Image (cartoon, rainbow, N blue to C red):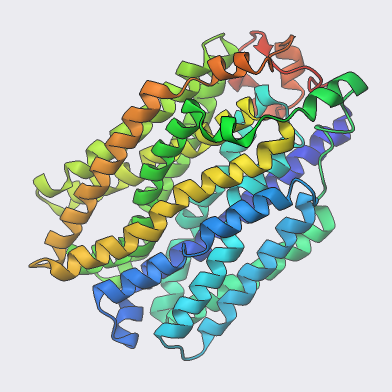
Length: 454
């Protein structure tokens, strides 16, 4: 592969990273604006929970539909259309709105954002072979964490200074800027098609029955863990601001920084997990351990942190546990998507990534409303938050244990005879920027035929 193509691949990764930053900022703004919105619109906890859940109403449908669409339409244009939809849904928030308008805009935003991660990863996977996908996957997915980490303090400052309406408007403008950059620099990768030789191209077009893929124990186990992780994520995105203000009694001015702590932890967890997983694979450790067990363990630890929340005193400890409970499970997003990429034929990968996102996002349809209902029924807001987070912890523990027990991508890859000749360290290094090459030990990697760089 030419040096210019390698540079182009990482330019695309950077743009997709920015794409994810905007995506999660769009999601998270509702959480830090929770208290001002509830006060202005006179909403109760259950009503605001409905607003949080409405984002996910058609999220899964959009994710699956777009997943099949990208099997036929270039991801370059799909990504552009998605970003444009995000921007348009933010601008109505600048003016005076009611509950109905707020819900409608969040539903529309959910339609546009539903397929974000799978489409972005599908686009990136057209530039990188399986053996070196973990690192670009981690970089792209941590864009979500960085988006919250960087954007929340800034958006909260806008809320305090100019009201929550302008926080939404700012995100709309940023979305339009990304559209312009993507039009100029975004390109479609050709790894899965043009770079393959005739015999190997036929292999890349291999298809497996969808029933076989959807009933795969490995895929189901990863989705179970992702469901639990997404329950925690959707609670943080919708309720973190209200938890800090109404549950712990903190001022709105401090919510931006403290609300961003889980995002900072997620960025570290995802990048560290991506690096460690790729390091294990390069040393010859099975993907059962390097992906299945590692990913499941991250969800178990996060679930344990949230399950302990009602039993610990003190605001600092509670903030620390919620941070860990949301941050640690984020590693499963990297693992789950990498597993799907490992065992799913190229022609069906976009659809399976989208279906996985739909399954995980179904937690978001339930979690914010359930939390709102629990808070409204509790004696105090803090009691309600403690109960809601405990429930989340139990769900995560179950999902994580399932992943540890049943996720075995290497076994399923063998069954589909998709393993090929080894990819050497020198070949793998061609796909990694010079500053990151020290992360990849000099061991041979295994890869499917036809996708080793030249």
